[in-house]
Length: 203
Image (cartoon, rainbow, N blue to C red; front, side, top):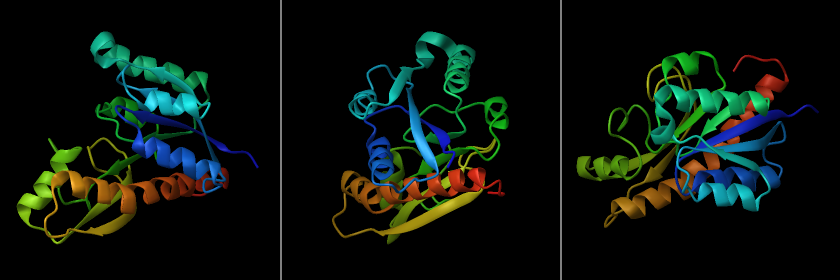
C-alpha cells in the first residue's frame, strides 16, 4: 500500500506531534507516514521529539527569514520530501492564503475548542482555555479541521467534547483537552485524510 507522506509543522514542545508519532508506531495511521517535522522555532523541543523517533526535521525561522522567505523555505522542504499531507500541530504562524491554496484539502489543523466557539484572532494556546473559563461554559473540547484562507475555517473533520470541571485552571483544562480530545482526534483525522487520498476519494 502506498502511504501518504506527512509533514508535521510545530512551534513548541510538540505534545501533539508526540501523539501522532505514537499513534503511527501503534498502527493507527496505516495510510500515512510521518516523514518530516518542520519547526518555526529553532529552540522547539518538538525537534528533539522528531530526532528521538528518527524522523527528518528542519527549521523555518520566520524571524530570520521574513514572511516570504519563511513560506519559501517551508515549500522547498515540502517539495524535497515529496509531502502529500500537512498537519499543523501547535503551529503558531499563520500561513498565507497563497500558500494554503496550493494545498487544497491537504492541510489539517487542531484547535483547542469546539469551533466556532473561542476561535479567531488571539485565540490560541492557553488563551482559548482562559476564555472558556471566563465565559463559564460547562463543556469545551477540540476540533480538527481542514485549513482554507480563513483562520479556523474550512471543513470540520472531527470534534470531541471535554467536560469543564469546578476548580479548573486554564492549565488544568488545557491538559485535559489535550489528553481527552486533541491527542485522540489528530491521528484519526490524519488517517481519515490519508485514506481518502490513497483511495482517490473526496475528503
